[in-house]
View 1: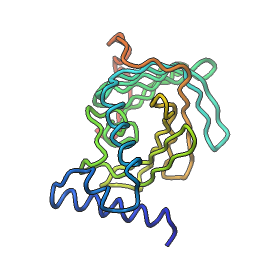
View 2: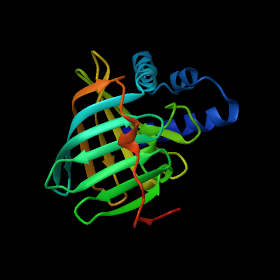
View 3: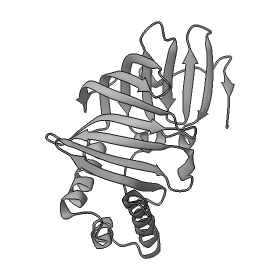
Length: 217
């Protein structure tokens, strides 16, 4: 068994113990002996950073392992709201309105919606992010100089896709995320000049689903 596989098993056991006994996450993680005290402290810092910053605005650079490339503007307002508007010639806008994740093609004037809870975006748009919650499973944690990485999946359906969150360390800030879908395609979204905790226009997250085909509803 590789070190990564061992870590996945330890984290799965951690989640099981949490659900069974309800012990504090920090104590459970410490007892696994797979993470140092500094690692556990970093996990707590990351939770606090994400939960204290309900909004973020940033330019984004998106690169996928299939060769696609795009730039655009990202707005997030937790819980449940996001707008990702790509620069021309990409006609796509992605909007999370609190319930659905809506893909809008401005060129065709068409939209498709799926329930947000069935998408990897739910992992970063939920009201409170807790790495010890019953539906969130941490599958990887690593640190390199100035960078911390943490991988998470939906505990009930870990094969539906994985998201890795990448943070700068000092100061601690979310800098990018990498989504791996069920086909193994990795999409990296880098945040350029992110602004946290700012006031955003609520109209950014509204979209009228006229002539849209809704899936999974």
